[in-house]
Image: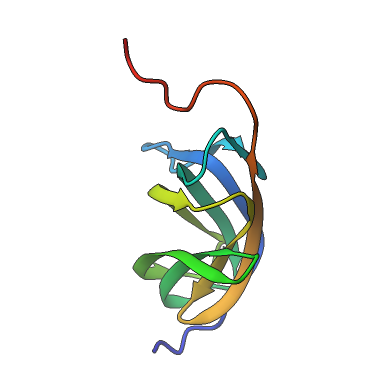
Length: 140
């Protein structure tokens, strides 16, 4: 394990996706949300996790763990390995995650770890809504 200090998280958001502009590296967070509506469960979802970090210096292996808060069941682990960060500026972590499946309605938590140390969390509610067509709609 690295001797890198544990960074501080000043922001962690869940959104539909994060776009990183190639020329400047600026991030655009698209569709920030805390409630995810679905007509049926299990529900396939694609999300992005954005975190702004301070006091990061050295090499980090990051982990995003998604858990169902009803019973702490682990839904998925997403790893981002070998990030070299410097404390001269703040750092940003962006993970666009496809292929998640939420098994049931309820409250879910995205937990952020750096080098096995817990840093922060962001929650979202998966809500079953009645009526309407399933998503995505089949092509005709």
